[in-house]
Image 1 (cartoon, rainbow, N blue to C red):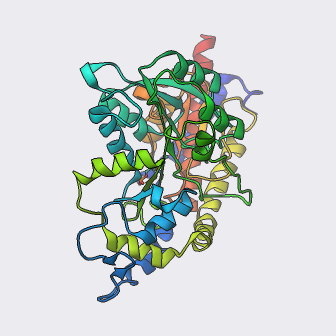
Image 2: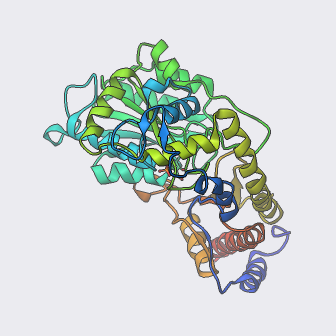
Length: 422
Ligand SMILES: Cc1ncc(COP(=O)(O)O)c(C=O)c1O
């Protein structure tokens, strides 16, 4: 329809349409937060502890001790990460904190297999950053002065030719970020061949580390259950068992920010991390750990619980996709992902349009994460990627927000076409 109309007329119509959609109250689509109804699913957590119920296998959990977590929670999170409990640390409430602290420890003190602190003598440390990726991963690197090397993210994982070249050539390339299943923001699922290449590639740095952030391992939206090849097993088979650190949390399983975070790795890595952690804490919140184990049980209970999440958020993704298809399908103005799980839709607009669309969308009452956030240093070289987070608003709000977004995409695209004609 838009193609058949002269661009100037189509633009005027699109501007009028956008005006009719403008909102007084902002809908927040910036972050991948669970909706209140999702949090309600875990309210039993608030009722399942009482005086006398705080004793577990490791003793009285009201007291200090068990610095790397209670045995019951190590079994639960070890099962999530498919790692032995004794190679699993269950710590505080945030996997991001664990990732941050792991890298701080590497910069200040080094890691097993290395020659000392990564930051020694101010030598430049570099990290491979598949992009689009998770902005907070990139923020950790920026904060620690780690130079970020973007590589393209494909539907089956990062561009492995680029990764192998960067890791193989330069000893100051010390590691990389990976979100292997339902990646933030594209929903990519790593293929077996990608995992094999990550495990087997030769790295110039002997202490190269993969930050394997398995945040969305059980966060399915469809009946498909993709299985990602196990990174630790693959690395161990390749003789590189110290290469991966595996991270997860219950932030999008129970309460966001009031759950469990876990790190699993080789025995040497775990001993190193546990020693570093022992300076910072005399033990985690073991009461929260115990109440999570009581609530979730094991992996079967956790999987059943995740079905309830999926039932709540699937309609929101469907609503978002419905509007995208109805308004932008076939226009050439955008493409978008249809993830089988996770928390995000990733849209690629025409080159050069993302910042303008996010700005216009904000002015019209829909807050999106700033354009560029999904790239290192906040710089999207093609200024085209926008991350859409549909979980927090209601289905009705998601529909309204996507109508605004699509109208903005049309206006910005048509403005450019009109300008090109002048
Ligand atoms: C890939 C990824 N990792 C980690 C987190 C944050 O996890 P946590 O709440 O455990 O710090 C998020 C949150 O959006 C995420 O998308």
